[in-house]
Image: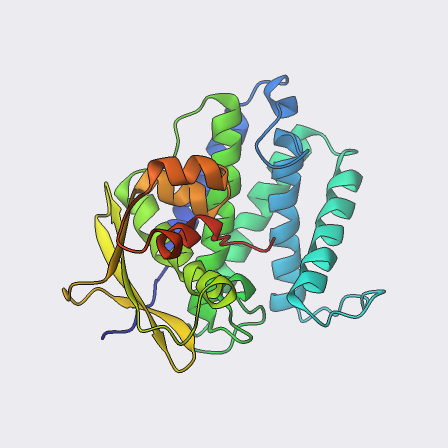
Length: 280
């Protein structure tokens, strides 16, 4: 079976950021205060969070700045998530002092610098940040950049939904997005399913990308490959709108299962609804 291909996300990352700046400039004063699907954050909070990501990327990665050590040791995935959530919330609270206009200006300032930095990285070199939700302790730069694209797209989508703006759901957006987010599926099966089971699951995502993958057990873990056309014992089919909403937890597991078609082992197929392709 063929391993999953790498995703060159820099071109679509750049387009996403330009779309973000145009979106922000179109928002009314009231719209900055609209609630979003992102926990307790409103539109302004989400944009402040995206800016924080840019500033951290430039400071820690480009400039090799060393942050203060966390007060509690990070010795598990859960403790890492707690640490990141605290960083995020601390910044968002402080950013309530900033005006929407300043947030736009700062985003315009950081965007070209982040893009320039990412373009200068060797895609195959070890990334500063591993993609933990994909089960990796160390990742290559191309994957970290693709993950960063999904983060930018996901939060911009929250703002677009909150303000009634058109969503970024064409093939150019969803192909790199879903080819990245799908990598969060194997860790879910590692956690909830038998790693030694003689199973093959084919996952179909239909719509503008129309793609499929094989999920199977190998070396005491679940692995994801490109589909090879072989018949699988269990098949999972979901459309692209359902897929991105499942992987970013835009809908509940119960809502997801109403929209997902499973043939074969129902219990095994339903586990895909637990996928979380971001740090949570």
